[in-house]
Each structure stands twice: as structure tokens, then as C-alpha cells.
Image (cartoon, rainbow, N blue to C red):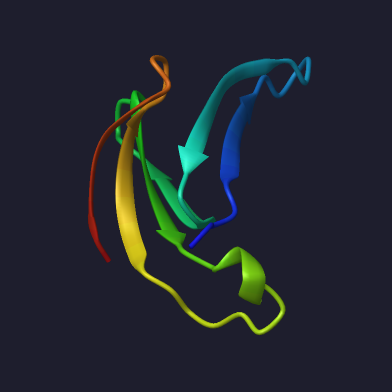
Length: 79
């Protein structure tokens, strides 16, 4: 199966300039939360098969942890 990809982009509020972009999510981004120090973000995603987007059949859900500055996924676990 092919899944749609999503991207999370962090912008400078004053200038609108892109600070960081996280790319490579296997599904739609649903919720995100930042660590207290702001260096990592946890993102919940849900797979939606590309051939079944209109029906919105639920797919696998997971929580991914990302290093914001490095743009690297640190790990994932089922949601």
C-alpha cells in the first residue's frame, strides 16, 4: 500500500521564515506536543491508504518522537 505523506513546518512568527521542517511521516498528522525544553516534538499520525482517501477508513496509529533542530525521527510506538 502507498500512504500519503505529511510535513510539519515550524515558522518564525515575526518573519514567516521557515525555521525547521520535519518530513517523512507515514500518515496524516493528527496531534503534536512539545517537550518542556522545546527540543523535541511528539507527533501522532494515522495511516490513510492513498486509494481510499475519500472513505477515510482508519489505519494504523502511532506516536513519533522527533528532534526538531536535526529534523530526525528518534523513534515511534503504537498509539
